[in-house]
Length: 142
Image (cartoon, rainbow, N blue to C red; front, side, top):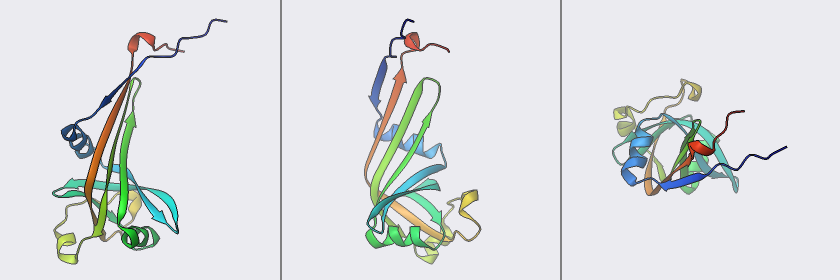
């Protein structure tokens, strides 16, 4: 039985502008925090806003983990038939005060619940993105 050749993959680093445009076009991602000394990753709704990324969450252990250390990683990705993209933001998260939170147009993700009143701002220290493309000539249908 002949073996199929591995597809050729092209990797491209996204520019800062492409990363922000990518983030602005989506509404769900994952936030990584340190919780009880261990890494933890949570799905979360978000919005790109002046100064960074705003998220809404409920009061609880995830919020506490974010506020204890403040350092977070936030990632959004997608995959289609021939292209995979990923954007990662590393930065600091802080809870907005009641006035700033009230001014926020940050949507509440449906799974966050009606009690998702805490609004956080992730201020980036680094943003990176990659796009992986499969060479269409080497992709075979099953």
